[in-house]
Length: 129
Image 1: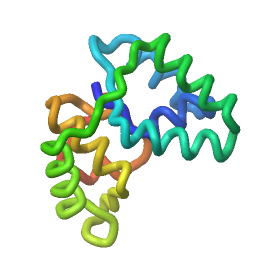
Image 2: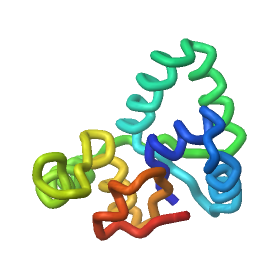
Image 3: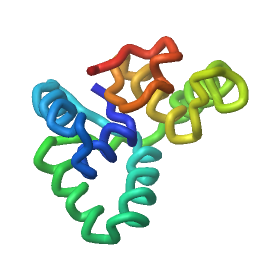
């Protein structure tokens, strides 16, 4: 399963979906996040919660065995296509930069995507929830 930044933010902020998302991650044979989404997560978390928030996030990554995947050239092409097909200002899904990399990683590994919100429901990506 591929994890979008939105799902990790929901978990770390204790939002209503946190318990269900945590169960899905722990029950998944593999869980991964793009390094682009890891950076996006750190920007959100450290801005709101400071360095301690990201330390907690990193501890969660270790406990849940979430792999942080490098971006490949192929994923770059998939992310670009995601923007062309579903990007902000082009499609009602309105995928942003980070969304495009989550989409690309899920496509590259042919996995469902764990996310919060409605943006990805407007695409052809499979939901993990």
